[in-house]
Structure formats: structure tokens, C-alpha cells
Amino acid sequence: ELNEEISPEDAAREFAREYLTVMFDKKDQEPEMSIEIVDSSDEETPEELRRQQVLTKLVGDIPEGAKEFLLYLDPRCPMAVVMVVIKDAQPTRRMQVILAGEYSRPVSVLPVVEGDPFAAETTGKKTSPDTRAAATAPPADAADPVGPAETNAPDDSSDEAEGEVSPVGGAGAALGAGWRSYFQVSWLPVLLTVGLFLLTLGRKPVFAQVAALLVSQSLVVALAAWYLLPVPAWSATALAVVVVAICGEALFHRRARSWRVPLVVAGGLFSGLVLAGSAPFAATFSASGTGRGEVLAFLLGSEGALVLVALVTAAVLLPLSRFAWYRRVVVEPVAVVVIGAAIFSSVEKYL
Image (tube, rainbow, N blue to C red; front, side, top):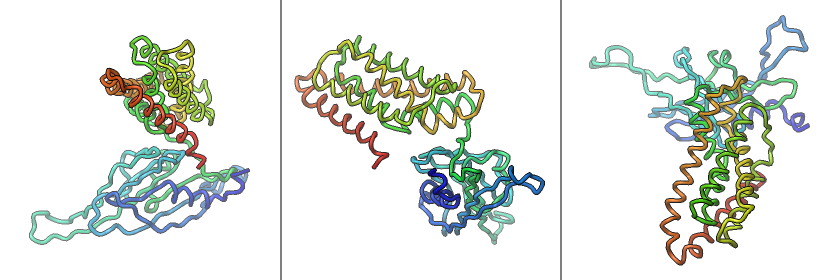
């Protein structure tokens, strides 16, 4: 019903204005925008199978003295962007996949000098890079030379600005995606890990909690990677509730009770769902036939980030715990701050 209220042109315009930023030397630009609907099917395609595309062109001049061109994708963007750089009518060999909150690799726009560079007099000309940022564009279409700074979104029967995140293959890319997923989509997984150390710093309770968190979080991420577990929209809210409960308990108790580990397990399950809903996760596992190597690499990256946060937290809190004022000056204020941050993270999207 919502898609019926939004025209394809409005959806493309909102994407280009709200999520995509054109930059020269990391300075925002305001290119002119034009939007048109074009027929992407040939004449022999039956009428009921014909498809259209919404073509959005962003055109502007290169600022004087500029050295690099790049794109920035807003962290709120629900999809990835595939960018192909075309210079002198020749597309580059490799596409760039830009995830939410990331910059593209810089593209040089320095003048191209013609003739002998050692000659006394040389003439130069600056070539404008034709750059295409295609949201959810397939690789075959992404290499087609099109206009400067274009975003190409398919217009099907639903008339919606929705796309599939382009997969990034390889265990190395999955390892980096796992690391980014822990920090990029939300601070709630980090807050959950920090909250484990506020109740007690005893070796056995801490080891049990960290182990329970690692196992439960890894299990959910693996099941989601193999399409065996859906990711509900309320995962972040549920995780925020668990973080509040864990940190709130630290304000009233000084030792782990019987319900502590099950509570941490619940937090690990919801934390895994939050990671599975991140853009790096979608970019890694959007293709069918997910391999075991990619899943293990993603888990290694995300769990490595968790262990790093745990080690840093322990290294900061352990020396301070020797003082009599530790709980009053450190634990209680930190617990209140973490609770406030968790609540804010869960309601931020509704503000």
C-alpha cells in the first residue's frame, strides 16, 4: 500500500537526495538532477513482461583545482550501491560495492597532459569521469557507458525503490564484513559486551558469560547465513531490553545469580539477529549457495570484534576495581550511561 503512494520518480529522487552524496576532495557537491523513465525491454518482449527503469542523472562541473572524486552512502541507506567509473568512454575493469556509511575509492580527476611531459610547452585537458552508481544493478548492465553520476533503479510492477545488495565474495571480504557488522549497524552489541563486566570481574562468571555470548551469537549468525532463520524487525529493540536488564542488575547486585547466563544467552541471540540484519551481512550472503568458508570467516570477524571489546573493557576495569570507590564512581555511572545509550539506540529510528 505504501508503494502505491510513492511514484517511481519520487522514490528515485529521495534516494539520490537522502542517501547518495557526490563529493570532490571530500567536499559535498549539489549537482543538477534529472529523472526519466525508460523502457529496458526490446520490441519483441510481450507487453505483460516489459520492464521499465527509472534513470536518475546527477550532472555538474568539476570544481577548479579538484583532485579526487568519490561517492558517500548514508548509513541509513537500506541497500548497497555498485559504482562503475567510466573515463574517456572506457569503463574500469572492477566495480566498487559501496555499503551504507562507506565512501567509494577516490577517482582521480587531475588534468591529463598531452604530448611530451618534458617539453617546454605542454597542453593539458581535464577529463570528466563518467561515474555510474547503480543501486542493485547487475554486473552486466553496470559496465554500460551511461551519463555522469547516474543512479539506476529498476521500476517493476510494485513501483518501489527497493533493491538487492550486491554480494561480495571471498573469505577475506567475509572476514572484514563480519568485523564491520559488529560496529557499523548498531552500538548495541558493543554495549552488551561492556555490560557483562559491570556486575562482577570474577574469572569464572566472566568466562561463562563471554562464552555464552559467543556461542549464542555465532549460532544465530550461522543460521541466518544459511537462510534457516529470519531476521525480525524488532531484534534491535529486544537486544536493547536485554542490555538494560543486564546493566540494571549491576546496579543492585555484586555477584552473578542463576539467571545471569540465560539472560546473556538471550542477549547473544538478539545480538546475532542484529548482526544478521546489517548491510555487511547482506552484502556477503545475498547470493545463493553460501559457502562454509564465507560463514566461518564472517563469524571469525564478528567474534574477533567481540573478543577485542571484551579485552579492552577488562583491561580498563580491572585496575580500577581495586579501589574502594570503584562501584560508586565507575560501575554505577557507566551502567547508567550504557542503559541510556541502549534506550536511545532502540528509539532513535522512531524519532
